Amino acid sequence: MPSRRLFLEQASAGLAGTLLAGLLGSAPGCTPARSAVRGQLRGATHPLGHLLRSPHQIPPPSGTQVVDTVIVGGGVSGLAARRELHRLSPAHQTILLELEPTIGGNAAAGRNGRTAYPWGAHYLPLPDQRDHDLLAFLREAKILTGFGPDGLPTYDETALCHDPAERLLIHGHWQPGLVPEAGVPAADRAELARFLAEIERLRHATGDDGQDLFRLPLDLSSTDAATRQLDQETMADWLARHGYHSEYLRWYLDYSYRDDFGVPAAQVSAWAGLHYFAARKGRAHNAPADAVLTWPAGNHHLAQALRQQGGAGRIQPNALVFGVREAADNQVEVLVYDAATQRSTALLARHVIVAAPWHVAKHLLPGPALPLVPLHAPWLVANLLVDGYPGGPGQPLCWDNVRYGSPALGYIDAEHQALRGFDAPGPRSLTFYWALPTDPAHPAAARQHALASTYADWLTLILTELDLMHPGLAARVQAAELWVWGHGMVAPAPGYVWGAARAQARQPLLGDRIQLAHTDFSGVSVFEEAFHQGLRAARAVARAV
Image 1 (cartoon, rainbow, N blue to C red):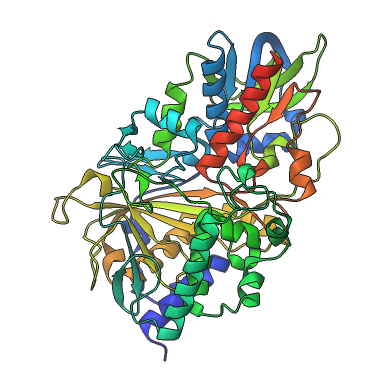
Image 2 (cartoon, rainbow, N blue to C red):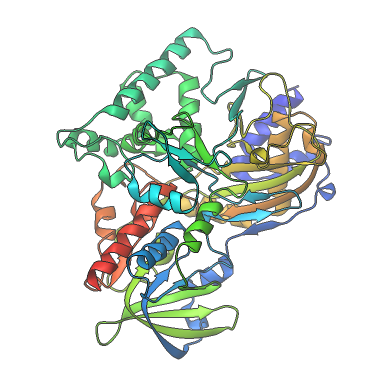
């Protein structure tokens, strides 16, 4: 008969793929009673967004307004575009339309009685010091506080992730850091070291054009043909071709790619897989190179800073854009439905920036359909209140806490930056992340299954995983607020980043009157890419004014 732990491990992996909560129904005591946990299942505003599939249900416009530029989408790209237009031309009139009740996109956040917590992206690695635009934004936001005598940026100490930063549960022991070390055989350690040494070489390598092989934003990467050819094979194939077979290395890479892209090495292009590691080149005067910037609300802190730096331009939430089309006098007509008033309006603008994901943008744009097919994995984010300290043998509680071999991505200590001690009174706030398995041949199936699953299904999944990381702690969960992202981050599948479809989809429409800006048009869904997508679109508009 299998042990309880083996049963839970099998259940965790199986539930991740099938979400069959009934699997645990035959094993009393494996998870705490669901009725003892308070909370609810949340998510993006699917019913409102899905009206795009049934436009006949949307009332026709009952009025018209005129504005200089309409920005569709209030995620990081849209907010960055709004900020840049205000910076370049403070008198420029903009209106930003956001489907959700609040801005931020996948940098959304929530709050419980103890702390703010992220619903999505939760950190920013140290920026490349050559990224002057990003550094200027961070300085205005008072996150970058100056420069040291070595010329390197100095960052606000409260924003730098406090120690201890990361730990990994492996072979029953919590080790410092996420690269597997404890109990790892010598041959596997040698393979891990060989891969990390190759990454270090690539981090400093340049192409024939003198540009870095890998850089952020990725459009600044070298045009080196041999390197870009790596976009045509999977990272898993590249590893095999170079003699990397260690299960520990493969797990570490799969974990890393699922954390940023939602899919493992077998579904990521080799170019993107190497770029993930080799493009990070940030340095700081007061922090090590591998440090990250983070806040209790995650990257919503950055989204709010972008909003505050964007001037007085109007932001309209709960707004469904259901049409973008050419109008008279070189104008663009944007049709928007206000869910609060249940009325539609036609906005006439000189320019439009569509900063929405492709699954939304494709329903809005005029002209023939573009051949872009981004892959998105559905995501689950769970914010838990746990009446107990998540300890265990070895390294104590860290900001990031991961279980080796898990189908989940572990949890963040949402209160880490508050510097509360382990013996602080009250429960602990933990943010769990889970990128759900997605078949690239049938991506809609995983999304539909995720959106159809119940709070009880998801809660069983999370509590099972928590019990594997900390036996008995699941029974001490007081509250679980859950969020399902049907469309997570874009996955840089083979051929996507440097393929013709992405290049074509980024071209402006109606001359230069419609600009597109989103990480779907980048291929890598990180803050730096979203930020620069917004700047690129805004500067194109400013040049045309």
